[in-house]
Length: 237
Image (cartoon, rainbow, N blue to C red; front, side, top):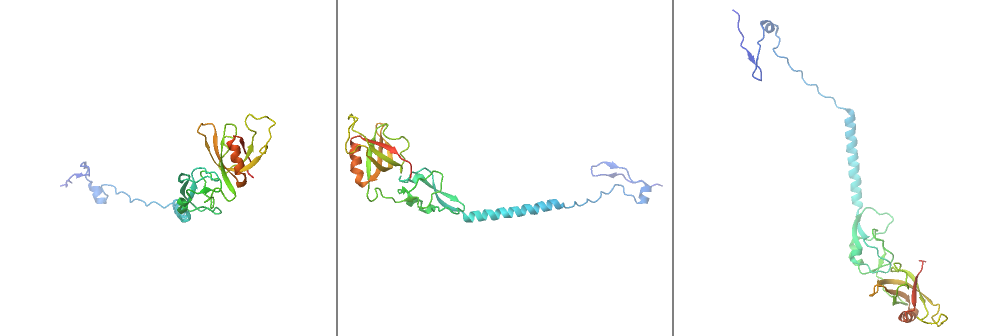
């Protein structure tokens, strides 16, 4: 009598044929055994790239740390300020910069003390404030005087009378005088320097404050009162 083997069921619930007596006697498995997975080999190129990436990261961190350790907060110029002009709070700001070899900057801690003083040189917007560029200048200086001059249209170059500009105040003949008129002021030219200028109330004239020698202030004032002054902008020497 031949023994009947019960059907087997796979993991999906389906029946599979029973092994034959020959298979049982031969010891053959009813199902194939999956081969063990083969471990992947490590690629030396990827290992080398990883080492290089780590080294670059370390160097970048070192450079960043060095740069931050040298960072400093200094004063910068936000608006152009001409020589001799009063410095306002809106003209300056604090910025953080790295190392500035060869450049003498001003620490940001001094910013508030600079407001209200005058520019010793022209300060350009967007630049770092040089040391000693702002000083407590007293106007007028010893043996100097400030004179106000009202200049009608055509008596001064427009747009060129910025503070600190070197100018000459030239005496003109009185209005309506004979072309051959001569007096002690004829052909007189007085050297001066612009302190500031503002448009006149009529929108046409210019009000000019000029720094001149103390011994020439009376002459300039007399000529200005008689409307006998023309201003010429000179080149810097």
